[in-house]
Picture 1: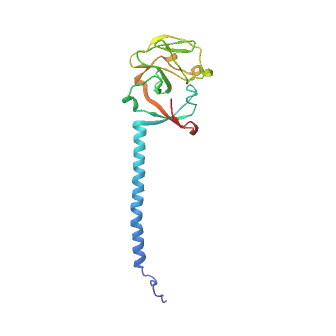
Picture 2 (picture 1 turned 120 degrees about the vertical axis):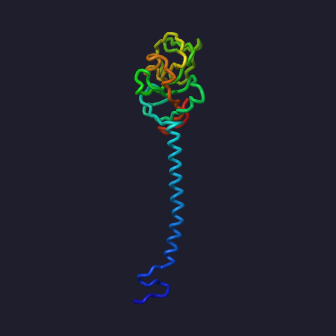
Amino acid sequence: MSSFPGQPSPGKRNPDVDVAASAAMRRRKPIVAGWVRDVGISLAVSAFFIIFLYQPVKVEGTSMMPTLQDQERVFINKFVYKLEPIERGDVIVFRYPRDPAKSYIKRVIAIAGDRVRIEAGVVFVNGQRLQEMYVPRMYEDVRSYPETVVPVHNYFVLGDHRNLSNDSRDFGPVDENFIYGKAVFGYWPVGKLGTLR
């Protein structure tokens, strides 16, 4: 069998093809290595944020409506309270005092040292009526709560849906040791994407 000029003979390797293939392989290796490195870094950064800073949680129940809906997904900041104090109005996540295996999400109404009382659903903190724009009229409650001083290292919390919430009116102020995060950002459903207030 004869071969044409420029064509390798059968059974022989073409050195030009081998060189081109080697060059292509060398070009692919840095691309693949770079991609693997980038994915690895992204996963490490994500793991750091989830483990030490932010944690996604799913809201279960309607006690925080309309601020938070049942099955809504939010990010909580687990580190923020190491840098700044818990404040009135913060939406916090904490272990339920009567069963620490469960987690609750509520709004801080009063902090340690505050005098809090509720008269027919109207909340007073240190003698001043609390302006609660986050509680629509249809979610108001008529329950009362006798004036009490929030103990040191404790917080008085209420759900925004007052007539459906199990909160400090039922189980008392929450010790700071039970609090493990501040709800900061809603990410699902997309229509409610944004910072929580």
